[in-house]
Length: 238
Image (cartoon, rainbow, N blue to C red):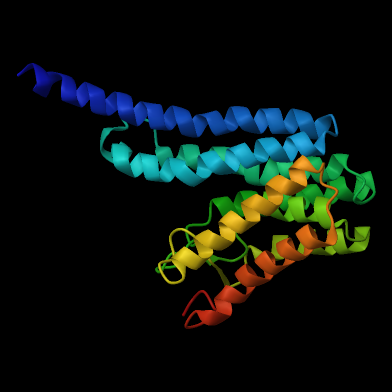
């Protein structure tokens, strides 16, 4: 009888602990934001890597703890979106603005475009297709910003990529979700691990890497960009 009384409480505690773990990504986002403002971009991306780790496993923990059933009044989906907007959008935009990748004024106004477009994208009910692909560019501004800081393309290329990504969020094309899309899942996870390893090396080297790391990052990006063409159709509505 005692076990029956304590089990619901234990389940609620487990669910709340998962919510707390997800929310910790917001605290990590603030640490990354402070580093970006201080122009410590290596530390900024290190913190964003921690946030990416949290975001990568909290969904699995939520399913194990059945937070949808026992999470009480806290909506885990909304919580996840709030934290993701900070770590995937706001912090990378500030990092680009505070950097020398392009003139500060241009970076600021382009950042406004990115934040505005991303806010709409995060609220789009069509964000995922029925087979769990993302519809449009999935607002991976943290990853795009990391590539810009490592590869250091000309300012005009940086600006073009920001505008292209902003428009791409509403394009009727698909981008793979490496964990949710079943086809090529293990290959996708392997590619993610390769990216994380290369990113870790880049962070250790203060974002100043050799041609080998650069080439590896480009290959990983090319792999993920090619995947929509291996689906039955790269168009989201088919």
